[in-house]
Image: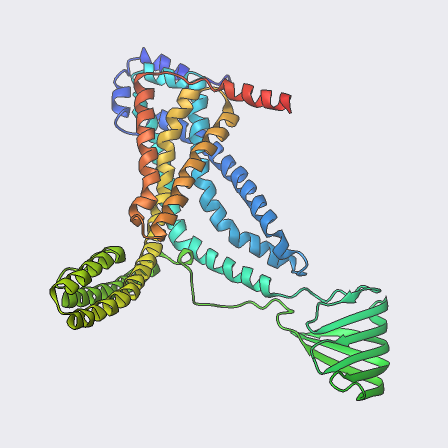
Length: 484
């Protein structure tokens, strides 16, 4: 059976007796076209999640490989390490996948003139956009739940495991003919190794500055029990030399000698910790922190207000520079209006006040930075998921306007918008952490800016119906490859 495109369907419907249907469906999203658009969005969305997640995971693995190599970690631990870090990677890849899906889906329908057929049937572009917005809302709700209930725990477990891996010492890897320095304060040389048996062993003890110990043995073997290394040696000699008195020298023969050496974190020790960073907390946990630091900050500000009002009879300024100018002016006024002795006495109090205010204001600023740090993370748990809706508003009209290009154009445009979004997001986070701007504007400004861009693109697409030719991108990259 030949497939009839959605454009033909709507073109035929235009001349049918059901002309009133487009007017009805324009106010809802349960029409046939909505289900069709959902299907068009779903495959590129899933495909994009897989591609973007794979790229970010490979990049993360490349940066983390030095922490994993040489640790002799079980494959299960390595897979757990990647699995736990997969949570924040997915949190980044899903908004980008929404943008790619909208660009590809609406771009494909525009290229096949299906958008034109819908609009010719009386369906407005905003109605065509509704399924995409609903799709974005659903993803946003799921992402808010993910950011608040799943991501913090995964980040916490990933941090603990990363620290455990970092502290784990490499396993004992004895290679004949080479010195082994994996054990602290000991240097070991083995001439031959047959299975578990070691032949012609030399052990230097480097932990003592007063006595130098050297052990020779014809044979032996090594065993590990927890964080303890056991050397069992046979037929050897122990030489001890007092470095402070070189005439004091001892030599002892043995048939069997056991050396017990404790080594911290030779095995991977898994920790449990209740302490969590800001990215390892739920919204409820962070709100408790915000309330706590706001109370501490307000206590300090009240103290500053009382001290400044008592000494200068004015309201306390917001920053230390302003207070310093006020104090300097008050000191000059004292010299003019008071006697020299009285002026010096009063100015000493003002200097003491200034020194104390410097510390108190610094403390209040530190508390404010803590408030901002946790407030930023609270807003981020909503702003990043909300970006899925924003990317629908920008991606859908861009897809209609670009038409041709497929996944290549979708990938390039989504990368440009995504990088722009995250540059604003990271910059805003830094400014908010330094208490330069409020956490709200730091986290929501990128969404607000791109929302205005999306609204303009929707208006432009709905009324101008102009397409954008991105073929120059292909020519540019082709030219670059030719020149190289």
